[in-house]
Amino acid sequence: MSEDWKATSPGRWERPIDSLEDYFVTIADLTRPVGGEHFSLSFGAQIKFHPERTLEDIEAALKQAWTVLRFEHPQLATTVEGSHMVYETLRNESAQQDWLSRTVVMDTSSNSSAELFPQLNQSPKQAVLYYLRTSSEVVIHSSHWRTDGIGATLLLSQLLKHIATPLTSAIVFGSECARLHPSHFALLGASDKPPEASQYITDQSLADYIAHLPSIQIPSAGEPMQKLSPTTHRQEIVICDQQTTDLVASARARGVTLTVVAHAALIHATKRMNTSISLDENASYACICPVSLRDQLPSPYNGPSYAASVAMTGVPMGFTSTNLKKDIEFLQGLYRNEAKRPERIEGLRAFQTKMTTILKQPPIAEVPIPAHPTLNSLGLIEQNLQSSYPSDHGDLEVDKYWIGTSVVDHTVWVYIWTWKKKLTISATYNTGIYDDRIIGNFLEQFSQVLIKELTPLA
Image 1 (tube, rainbow, N blue to C red):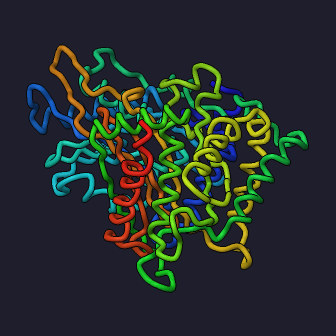
Image 2: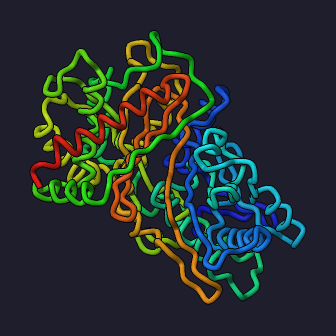
């Protein structure tokens, strides 16, 4: 166990929340009065058992797999008390059964995860596992400060592996505390007082972001902007395998990644939603660009053994969008060079502390409310999640994967990923600000920019 975790009583450990985690804790606290919780994280998969299993057998397998996952990733069961993260072990069978009764839900009423997702607007005290009988889906719901998109996918993979192949040895809780995740900044070597050059880089990013507000945005359901709702909806559009292959080839021909091409397409789809702006007309765009830090962490913290950690940050960005070619060039520089340059990592702790401090202050009247769409790319899902989990008990097949966060502000969060050779574009949005028709139109515009404007180079 890392030195920052301290035993405060038998079976209980605590450590201060680091500022990566505190950013998400603060956002959750600030938005909870609306009735929702910004960035509350849900993810899942539609599965098939070969041969089929009874509901009773599935429930038993889920509970055992969930228990193993907690033992391997105790961070899943941590809670926040004040400024500290707290973990309490399961001291006996009664405590284990009580935890299972609270955190495993056999949902027999929801027809699908699409129906369940809008109900998951506030995170539970500890991560919860759902099984939807009608659609045969597993769904995990957690606060975002416990994990991120890549970590969530890794956790899902390990859960499905344990469902397919049950652990035969007994689990004795108490030793799992050794696997509690330390502060990210100790691992990254990020000081609370970084060099002036590092401080300048992070400050400049924030200044660029603010300077380009108000950003172009997807028009809201009404004018003036409607009142925030506690409910988030999610829509997605799936691009067929041949068109996805062509998009990847087109991106490679440009010397960029699919993420860069998709982000440029998002910006220009947003322009299309604004009839007063032409596709090649200058327009301010700003967002907080999600960046994974998992590959920056030392082993084993960069791998599946520590999937339950929020190993990500947000890089503020702002620029003047002109045409697709120039936007792609700018975004390539951001993703390839700027987001993970050593000076930025060095200044990360001070930057995150500053961002959280800003959140806790009253809004500045001169700074417009952010209402931009933001892209979060999870890449090739098969790198972290198998399409099937064979075992002596029978195969578990994964049909569908998805992820989404609750949104309790004016932004639209767009997740993209490739699964089974098909690109998925998924948008989550607050129903008090946007209606389903508007976001459906935006996703259509997004896919059209990708397919018609950006594929022909392939």
